[in-house]
Amino acid sequence: MIITVTPNPAIDVTLEVENLELGEVNRTTDKHRDPAGKGINVARALSKNKHQTIAVFPADAVNGSWIVRALAEAGVETFTTPMLGEVRNNYTIVDGNGLTTKINEPGPVLTPAEVDALLEKVEWRLDDHPTWLVAAGSLPRGVDADFLVELGNRASAKNVRFAVDTSGASLARITAAGSPDLIKPNLEELSELVGRELETVGDVVDAARSVLPRGEVLISLGENGALLVTHDSVIWAGHPPVTVDSTVGAGDSALAGYLSVSSKGNFPTIHHAALATAVAWGSAAVTLPATTVPGPGDIDVARVSVIDNPPVQKTIKELSA
Image (cartoon, rainbow, N blue to C red):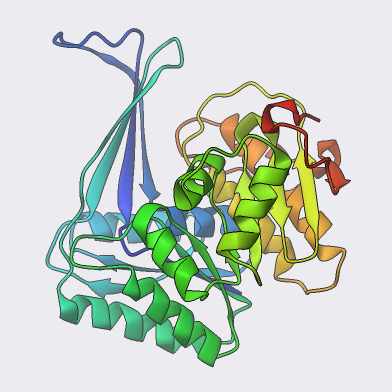
């Protein structure tokens, strides 16, 4: 079982238009409404592929209740804590040329009591001995990155592996604390974390090992696949080009794919299978509309190429399946 924590859940509203014209009346050609927030997306992808998962998040009586109902229809088990603020809406406008415009609400302010309640809910579920605790996404107002450190401490106390997918100051704080067993930045987020451009495989490897020397760093590279860096190994995986519909949530599906395999053990070959699965799930996700997560019929791990120790001098843009 895998537990995901989404401190700042959302409803993703995707609006499709033929041609977005600023300052004019635009009419939609289609609309999608999905429960979201990175941890919730991870849980949705895991559940759709028949992996047991529990999504933990704060929820208000309106938007939060809608998320709970939508996840129940998708077969995702949820545990929520009440909050007075309202779960945010994130809007994505996609025009006929594939141009994407995002408008994200900031989300509610969580009170100290609401933060404590969320921590206690997670603590209770850790007694079920999950294989992973996953904290993913942004932090709501009123919550600083010490919340992630506390989650890591509680997971460690229960011998549960801890994965984090966040960015900016939150990622800097949690890696400085050394809490995660796994982080999943994209190339831009890792570059921001170390304060320099990362152009080659060697650059990425050095950066990953500098921020998490004893853990696993899964770096998504978009169309150039993904790198997995540990203290003693470097693995690259890539998928042949696909027709992209929406990239929103693809990284969350990739993380879910990785966890779905790595939860089965810790023997050496697990990293190869986990990385290949991550790339397959992420590649499948971008072919689907809005934040739709891929299911078994969408995913083809056999198409993924996996290479040990790719040349350190190779540029990221040169990596291809």
